[in-house]
Length: 560
Image (cartoon, rainbow, N blue to C red; front, side, top):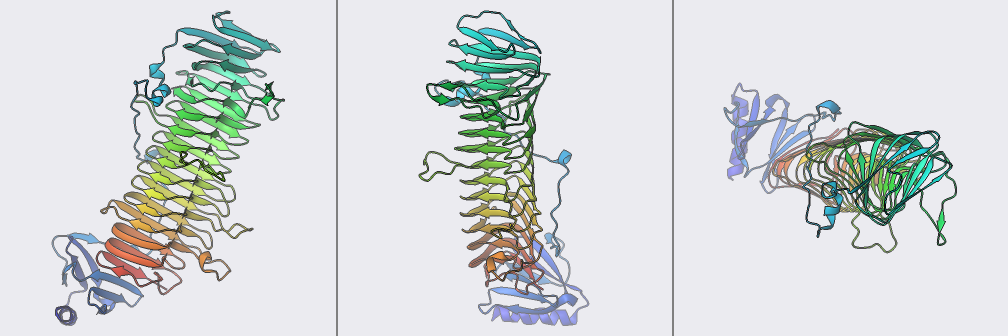
């Protein structure tokens, strides 16, 4: 009875006052102005738990009555004023103005911890060998070193074999037909001291050891490495062929450091490849072009930063920019610009009987990443496991038909940071897969940060989740999802343009703006307990396909 009297009172005030707007005041201190002249009617739901303001333009505002403090005809003097945008936008960021966080690495000195081996700060060379290339030969200083042998082929192709440890090799000079190969029983440091080296018939640097290599890009040096378009037959040892997968290849871990510049061109294979893992701590690495992948690794790919210098990584690849086959990709710092024909960031572990100890996740914890992919069905990020973002900045543009910004076989956990995505491709011709924003096979949780996606292809979905989507961040997240193109030519329900398609949708806080040609939300259930939800459809009178369960928050829907 009390709520019915409230309705009568509101209508009476509207008819007897010169005021032009209703001001709905929420118990959480927010207010929303609703022009009287635009309002068609005010109703309650059957249980009298919701009050609805209906606009002649098919706009509906809905509020939980037990959260509404008052409805006034004059603007309150206090309270945060809410607004809504009937045409929300997603715009690119000026790269030079992007603010992002870096995680500075903690140097581990306890040698009982495996990760301590990644830090060159724990490594003190006792032997130094300088190798200088020229067009006709190689000069080695000192000429002889205990435990190390040198063998040259055709004057400029060098093989180094070592049984000793604590060695630092410095390579420099210039040679258009040379290479260096290492066999070593111990870890070592390889320092680039200003080297231009091209091997027309294989890798420029081939490291045939499973031990750690500290790959140091010498301070204030410029270095260039290039392989050949066609590789010669590999060396065979004990009936097994040696790997030679790219311009820089290593059987063991590659730990990049230093503050110089390394330019890599891959005409015949990957640019930088390890059959173990790659970790980049500092330095500027430019992969100018790669026939295959920019970085290709098995166990892990990780980017962090020292306290003195963050890494800068630029990749242009025909294949994937970063591909980790059997482990995680972890980016915690640095400036990365990735342009690829395939996936830009790919954790690609796929086995018939997977190893449960392998977690092929992509983790973004810091850094600034700018991505452009052009390949058909390519993604900015592809994770066989889960995608987890706790900080950092990503701006991604995918243009290939059937491509995705995030394509994840596991869960998507977006806890903080910024993700801006643009999907400009349309449907893939063979399987009619739409180009879209986030494709998630598991559940998706948004707890904070900024997530903005714009899709311009027919039948695209900004988020397509086979599981449930939960937005629960105590107003710490801002979500804008646009899917603006019309449906495709089929009548199939899953080929329609939508902002969100999922099993169940729950929002408990934050601001969510959805704008779509078809349904803004298509789900089995939609629940709003807190926060602000704007759902707009430009071609459907009902932007949300089911009756929403609302116990709090602000809901605005608009259909056409």
